[in-house]
Image (cartoon, rainbow, N blue to C red; front, side, top):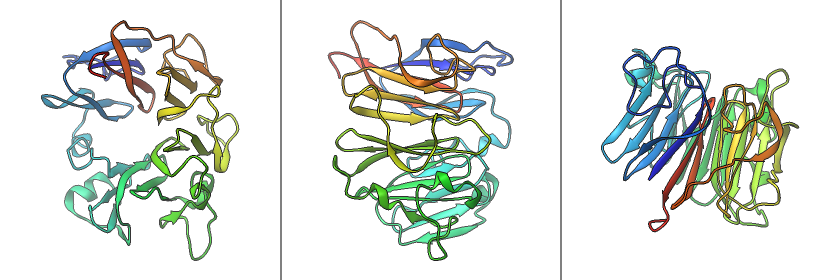
Length: 301
């Protein structure tokens, strides 16, 4: 497998093996191969560091201070644990509840903030700037977070379904292309991908830049040049998707080269000029201000 990266690299967070002196390194404006291994999974990519799962275990690059060392552990890097941009942590217990903590430090010390019960079969838990999205095995999607940014919740807020507690996103029920199989979130933007390769998105902020040109407070179809979508991911203010045809498209902010294309901010999807003989793209991932493409050798794909 091979990992390609583009974007913010001030602390060498896109370079493996890690740099000895990760200070003031230039951004990477087009996708460059940064690692080859038998196993590559981008587990977490913040503004300061990147964590990969490889055949040799977890690998880190970038700047990790003492507080951050609480975060990149197996518990917090699982698909059912997430850290929101405001520092709040949520972890699914694997049975029937999601526990929320006020910070990474609280979670490390076992200081429970709140527990949400009756959350069965959660397969994915992701975070955005002010809240969380949970996906269950049967394709149901729940959101919760700060009521001041209600457009990120994609649902109606009522006394019985307040913003701060998990509420079902009913507009994602009974979709024509099947149930939701993946969710992705970052900044103030959320995506949901169906089994039939349709993409839906919502979110927005009244004053801050988001990945959407036209924010939506309810799930709306996201059309990427009439392509079916195989994989998707969201950064602070950009998005990256992989089509079923094997092409990569990006949109949003490109201040740090995170789109991997020669462009400034774009509100229209752009195809990444990516070509590598003998390799097939198998996944994409967005960091806060970075993007990653994962490939496999063609005969192994």
